[in-house]
Image 1 (cartoon, rainbow, N blue to C red):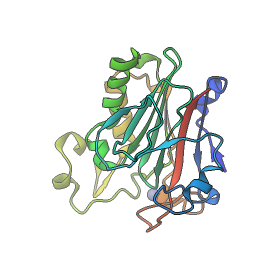
Image 2: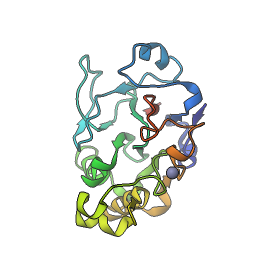
Image 3: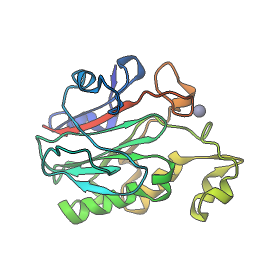
Image 4: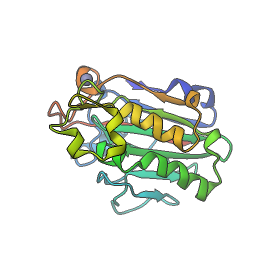
Length: 221
Ligand SMILES: [Zn+2]
């Protein structure tokens, strides 16, 4: 099964997107059957090597070598973007005005680096995107119920501290704040607040020990 963001549905004439669920199998590009798995998707996305950083790459052609980046942006119709997740946030951005897209892999390390805020700014620099026009979806990911640290105050920088409850951290609210800070209206942000580790029949969870990954993809028509 492939899920869709409700906020993206009015734009189905301009773009194709989705989030795979566990029953569709794993989309880990380090697995041998990955090329065959990709045939289950309606597009052939570019999947990169994710490294939990904040590097943003402008995609202008299909790369023949794996490259390291956690955010991809493009304006090319022939180049759908993909990331794979299991607990980390898969973030998709669509700008209907400049017809540009982004796919972001945001685990807690990239959240702390504010990769999503940086990607919004980058789309402004590269495509002339206005944050007020952007539509954003955030995939099912590790919720505040399960994002536990042994000593969050010590492990995380001070600006994250308002999102700490006991030993747990609410990265959904952190992402929302980071997007609002760069000027994205709250009603244009959809966060699917389903915790991956609490819904193991639907999603893969790294915290649960799963090796599998869901694919989160977006492409322009
Ligand atoms: Zn949970």
